[in-house]
Length: 112
Image (cartoon, rainbow, N blue to C red; front, side, top):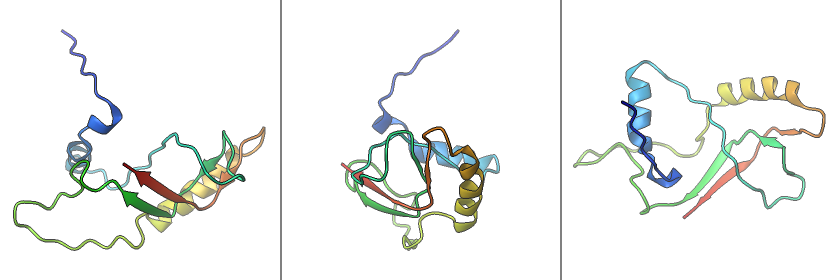
């Protein structure tokens, strides 16, 4: 029997997915997303390896694993792993050509 669950992107239980991956030993996630850019030099088909994030989605969905009286301060200054970013940039530059460009840094802005 096959069950189909239809979820909108904002309904995907991201915390459960992250916890499940961690429980099987995953320590690094490399993800892609499709989004636009307000910068003229970033064109369709370009790739950007982000190095910063601005998150303006608080209050829309749970944003922490620390609840129920548990307090933990997690730094947000460097949200992306530098070693992983370096590896992605090295591999990504091999994809350049035929109208595809890789940008070595950028800021992801999440708006609600």
